Image (cartoon, rainbow, N blue to C red; front, top):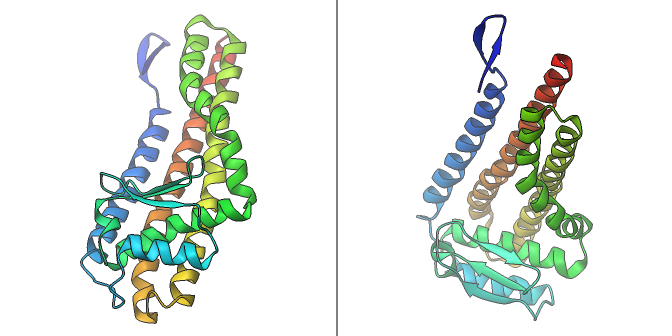
Length: 236
């Protein structure tokens, strides 16, 4: 966006914050895709597919009410605590690669978090509705506040967007913990050998970077809102 001031058009430098966030996200996404592609070509010695590994981990944890299902797409794997469905994607469900087994074990980590009442996961689930509202309404309200110079709308927009940032902040330890559980289970159950664990660890570490990048990008966007709101107050 360009703003008018002192007789000329000047560039809104806060756009650089968005660009930095976008570059971080793109770099993290590229890293996880390339790492996954590398280790999906390496078969695990056990021969267990992602689905089989998930079922073994869940059984060992005493979890019998979670259904392991196949879902279309690439890297669309997730655990849904509402339906207790552990969904594994095309490249994970039926594959016996190190990448597939590592991702499946990670999703099992979320199922175990849910079964054991892991605090950060429960907090994340609790704030999902508020975070969704914040993500959808924050920018329209904030922009309206800028256009019509209504300070309360600027404040509400910032508060709502802060909820989305809070969600990203809580998500990070949830994901890191799920990966830690995954690696412990893969080792203790003998699903992967010592030399294979390093490959799974690289896949999960690359995936964790995407959450770090998402949090950093959200913080940069929040900083931009604060800067723009401060500039509007000075203009008034």
